[in-house]
Image (cartoon, rainbow, N blue to C red):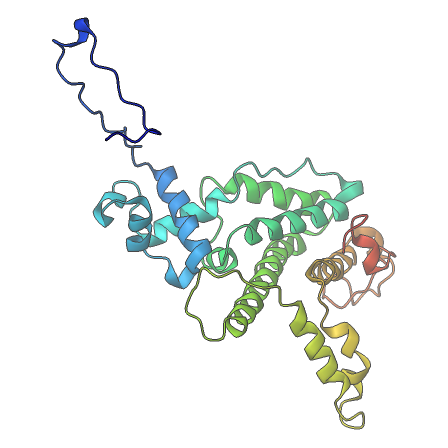
Length: 288
């Protein structure tokens, strides 16, 4: 007896009776490509972190054999370099403006941090790969142009390029480590690496309270700075760090050299007036 809710299919029409049954066509499979391999690697990285990223895991994500990957990438290290390079797709550095060099470097630092934060553990990958590939050399060239056009001495411009990049990498690396630690503590020993990583801001309050509770006679400075040393605003901490670097660079400009003694210029001890704004003024309107 037919279910009343299920309609009975009509019999075949006379002109269809002689036709062979229509063959079932399998859906077309998307060809494997270098781009798909990199995208799958990012998926694995975000889920399991760098320590859990392997060629086998990437192959499993794509539903292919490991050997199929090697038609598109030569090794895991090659894959990591491609992932790092992919972060710079669409990145643009403006034409250097000597009147706005500090603002341009602030924007560069902030965008660099956001690039690394776009995927888990990218700071670790960044620190292990020099950016002197054919794809990234134009980016490095434009960055150094910002420093030299500002009027910085060549030696200082060369060192500042590495200093700023290292600061960005190190800051984001620390952010990731604290997030992973918070996730581990919040997971109560769970091995599920795909669990969301909580914000570690609660740890900041605990550390502030701990510093404030230390004996004042033995730790006067830790107590006095307890509310300032550790904050729950990573944006604010990052911006203040950038501002410290920029004020140091400003002391090497020719107009700042007049404020230093003749024995101080170029030694790293000279202190020019630089930018007289407070560190908090470097933040964008409405930014934490």
